[in-house]
Amino acid sequence: MRRLFRLKCRFNFLKKGKLKLLSMVVSLVLPLMHSQMALAAVDNHNNSKVSAKCHVLLVGGNEIISLWYIQQKQLKKLKDNIVGKKVLPQQSIQRIKIYQAFECVLEDDTFQSGKARLLDSQTPR
Figure: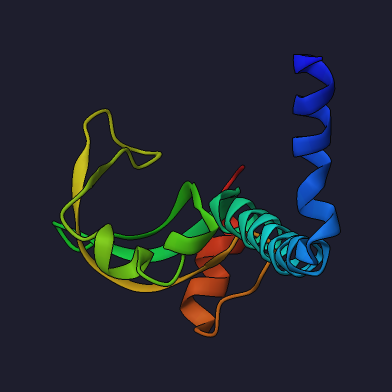
């Protein structure tokens, strides 16, 4: 008897017109969940790693092409972030600080500067 009463109470809210409220809540929640999943997919794309190359001036006056493997969203700030970092040039056995960064692009892209394009063509990968 008690069980039958509980069943009647559970479905009693459907009879009182709350079904419309339930369907409205569900119709609002589902699109929100979908938009959150879409935003997460965009975030994953921005967090994916890419290869980049930068035309830099080292302490001592040498200009080289420096290769980096970074997150996609860090590419815009890479030029500013690598100044002061140490890199290992091909002809050297010790690491040398980057004094200035001129330009950074994706590895498959071309540099705007002619000198950077020349250095890039001479840089082995």
